[in-house]
Amino acid sequence: MVNLRIGLAIYDSSFDFIYPYKTVIRKRPNVLRNINEIVDIVKLEKIDIIVIGLP
Image (cartoon, rainbow, N blue to C red):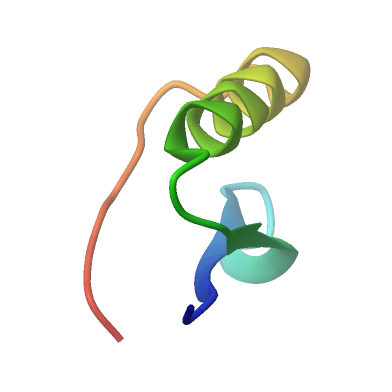
């Protein structure tokens, strides 16, 4: 089984800078746990916008 990584970064508008936040290891079939972890981070950091893309 291949573990996929989800890289999270946060944009700081006061410095116009993006910095790495955390890497979430995605283990199938437990995708719901990963989604809940990301939702918790969004709430904790009070994130307004999420951008999804490929490397």
